[in-house]
Length: 369
Image (cartoon, rainbow, N blue to C red; front, side):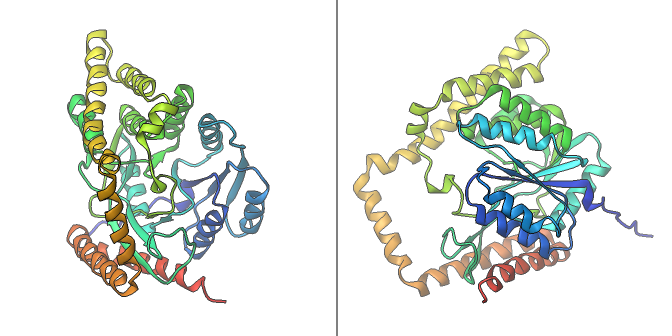
């Protein structure tokens, strides 16, 4: 007889929605939750603390199990880190998942991740590669009828950490597989953010490298290749507006950040000083290698400014022709869906795509008067 899966209750998972700006996206995120059958508790962390977040909370408090906390973000980035620790300290459930307000959850993938964590107590987090979509040609629009799937984050590893920590460090920097939006055991995620606050990173890219590695020092992590639990709106986030490494290097303290990361992680991995030094050096070396891959690509726009301007001009010109743009996006989405069908298998593919169609419908019918 086939064993019937019993999923953990949705009330075992808290969604932590962290906001700084873009309050209308928070309204959209919570509105979409109301459309779902899920009953996830929500901690709504409001970094603006200007009253608008409180009004959004008041709008949904009768429909959702939601808690609103405020922490005004004035100082970069310590106020953000402080808010995250404060919000996680309010989580009462066994599991927690970070969410950005311009994104969407996919229940099928969340259910499977929760079930996996329930059955595997030595794992501290589980998730899947995020899907991305674009709305109205990578705009920051809240609602649109022109919504297309854009890509899926690369999958490199299923079970982490790898048997050899030097291999894990190398893979983390050179084949980065983000886990920021995975489902975590609540005490694990709180411990990670307490360390982030203590170190007080000046650069969020290094902070995310730390996030990845620190989680693996606390337990195992599982990544489903054949599922999806999170959908990101590509083009609406801060980093999509352009990340200037040179400006960050001058204004922030990246060299100290990576040394702080290396020191903290090496202490948690190795007990003896010689082994600790090896881990420390491995982190610095592999981060430098990652920069060697990133910087040549980033510098092209400055070394070959005329060619770069021609490229942008041609892209903008083609984008003016809506038929060409939509045709390209349709074919790109179709190619991605075929890829997902191979990865997921028919049954899971149908469940995930059903949820994706519902999200598209949600984005389009909200346009109606």
